[in-house]
Image 1 (cartoon, rainbow, N blue to C red):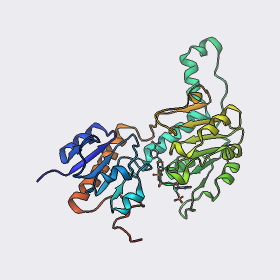
Image 2: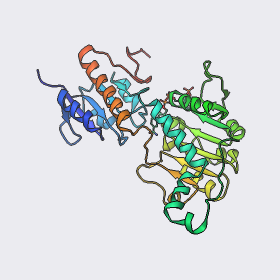
Image 3: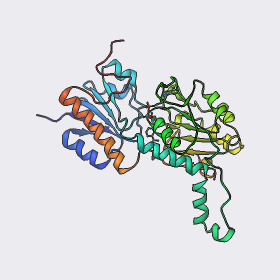
Image 4: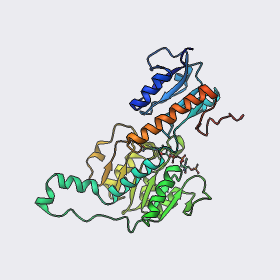
Length: 314
Ligand code: NDP
């Protein structure tokens, strides 16, 4: 029997690419797509809009490598009965580890301290200046989902108080809930954004929120770059409206504003939240398992809420 045709977009780990090519007939974006029945969407966050979907009348499933799936036109997919899957849970602990590392690097100035040593300044100028601390901080997590909760548990172990903001309060957590992001920013000095991208969260962290965070404020973003107004953040860092920022994600990746590059009170990571060999392999396997399950049993394993399975009639 002929192999099912799968369009690959973006980059996948090599073992995932090899397994995909073993099980499916893999096409790339420049090839004829009329017989394509699935999309495997790797890193790169390439948009999948109505025009691309229109080239694939036989498309049944979009398997996204990663938990965030902003950039896929979900309404267009749902309207055609195309199921979208992502890779939740298998990356949660890795991203929470990275978030904790980014918080520590930013609050304690560890990146700047390392640059100081490497530049020979420890020997020539003496001890690195004293840093801020987590010991007197209060963390507000914007987006207490899978990753946010895994981070909150890490902070619990470090005796750092946690509160959170989301659209809905959770009944299963001991942390205080803020329905309003601004009210939470007033209450805390460390804001950690672990929000999904998309229009609902675009620029949710703007000048107003940064002002509320205050002069001792630290912003950490490990969710999506689009959730922070980057121009407002740069102005807030320059003007001392907040103290520091730690960023794993940016509005226009892989481009990072030149002004951020020059600031010593900013920690910049190239979107490495889940980027270990171990976790990327697990994500690749779950993406493949979704495709295999769909084409053998007719069921996706981890459909996103916007394209539920079995489909609900609206
Ligand atoms: P979840 O879906 O489990 O959590 C999302 C959280 O955000 C929930 O608490 C949700 O609560 C809240 N939320 C969603 N929309 C809004 C909104 N409009 N306003 C306020 N809160 C909102 O996702 P994960 O924890 O698994 O992942 C979170 C995000 O992290 C992903 O969407 C992805 O973009 C990003 N990510 C980044 C990685 C990196 O490498 N840096 C790696 C993996 C993920 P409620 O529904 O109640 O609002």
